[in-house]
Length: 257
Ligand code: NAD
Image (cartoon, rainbow, N blue to C red; front, side):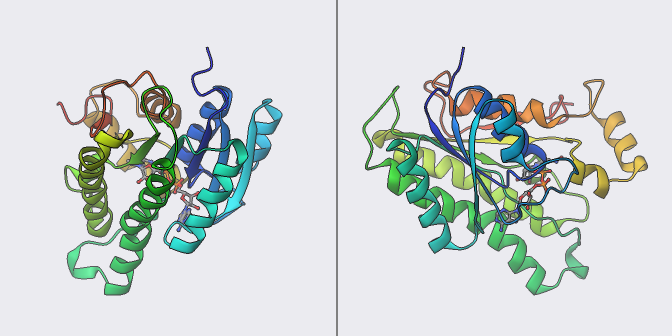
């Protein structure tokens, strides 16, 4: 059954990797997907996300949007809400990486990572929540927010200080927004992926790193973007009733081991 039939869903950073998998799965479940990214081109090779979705019979549009630009994000939300008259879901997935530890990290790079990975999530949550508060309750909620955090907001991100700090912030923000807006029908949750092999992840990680991750992960394989997409679908759909403020680990048991 189509769990997002007729719903408008924004997915940021959906030109590649996990965001693309989320956009495709949501479209297969009947959502009108708004792909928001700074790049139309694809980091993984192959075709742009909207082309893939359209060919699969789904509904998607691309809107070039920098999540750290509040005005652009407000315009994105307005436009998305015009598609069906409401914004049902936003998935805040866009991110950048800058692998440096403390003593090698420049202030400008810290600022850039924070601007996209943390302030960008704040800006997108705020714009979406303002819109959702104007909507009627449907299926128990005015709207649903899904943020991408990471296991590296809970344990050290090897050599990537700014990224880990931003992701810890995303997990905190998720709980705070959930608590502050539960009474007004906004559901806000996070997904915390473990080691997920994406096009970019694959390029950034060498075989030795992947091997270490395989040995560290109890489940006998590394994660796939679809593993994360299925968790995001659960949180974006009405099936996650009475679930808000959680940081759902999708890590093959990494954190438990
Ligand atoms: P990715 O780098 O493949 O995709 C990120 C996307 O965000 C890209 O398409 C990029 O163009 C876009 N983007 C970058 N800056 C942007 C901006 N300012 N505005 C709009 N879009 C922007 O990343 P991924 O591996 O698919 O990760 C997706 C999410 O999952 C991220 O939030 C990441 O932190 C999280 N995550 C990934 C892993 C993993 O192993 N891949 C693990 C834990 C968490």
